[in-house]
Length: 472
Image (tube, rainbow, N blue to C red; front, side, top):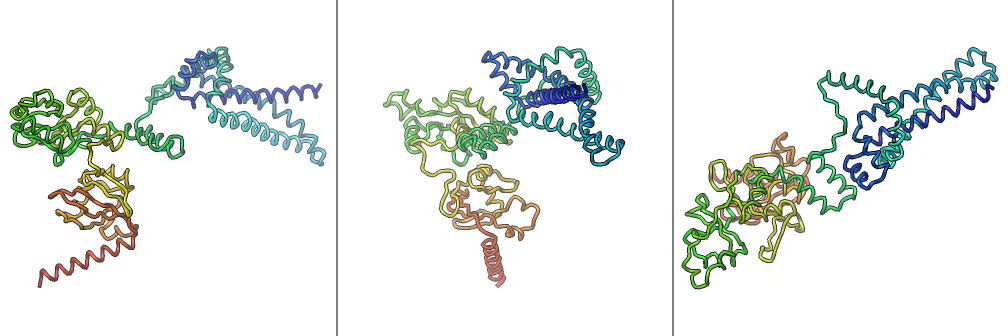
């Protein structure tokens, strides 16, 4: 009879451990599943997938049921397994000459360790790892038994869950029945970058998605074509001048101004020229064709800028600064390029915003600091500048000349003295071309610490010579 009871107890121990494994697997698989995945599979009409959706929609209740099941099976497992294992181990220790009392104590202690270890490994850790690795498959297997258990013990689960929710509310937290499935743009961006690093997304796709997620954080000032590069026409210019300007620049839209850009009366499109007979194009002034366009503040966020530009037939908006002056214009092409990168057609000049050269990168002085970092890897510290040209001007403190070089600060330079910039190596900016007082092209050169120290010494010596000559 004792042999039968021992066998039945061992079978019960295995069955209860399997029960614990089922509840643990159900718990972790339900919490690891995204709602979008659950809904997508439930729409296919599969009965098991619909049960997973039912369980996922009552997640708090199901998790409470899983916890109750784990507790019940674990307690019964300990109650059954420990004495059975102790009876099996007693003869082993008594055979070694240990007294009955001592052998029984050792057997109980060892049986406790064995029962707990087996239950933890096979009843908790193994199913947990499987559920995390294959959440949907595990949820499909466990959802049915889990729902059935929850129905049988519904009254107890409601009592325990209600008590726990009452305690949670006392801490000022409102319990949630479902997991939050929404993700912030920052979380999605991190997910995209991680997927690209691991090869789950190709680099180009990841870049487009990442740019799209960051687009809403951009301002009109960051998206616009700056004032200094705008091609405009005067209100007294004619349709013939519009056609000539379009042929010369490759642009299709032009602001029409009354003196300067601060007095912009509207925008004309080159296609409007062809609505007029060729014989009168030299006589019709552009102020008759100019159409008013939206005016947006420089601080307006990217999403709202997109809506304003899309809503206007000219697909362009004027950007004004805090003083009311025209800071630039933003077009649909500017917005598309912010997401997709450089978009070029047969009318665009060959010169790009940034391109790789043998010893570094050839960059436009109007390139934003974040675009510089994305294209070259150089990260500038925060400062009162938006563009690469602004950074160089800040470092020099004057208008530079073509060919001048300046050591750029590293991201931690605000915590160091100027002499410390040569400790880790860094970057040099060489002025390649000026457009009057504006820095037009800059070559960024990554260099070693030794080269930087040499350049700094050379600059200090040149400064000392200049000082001596001025005193002489």
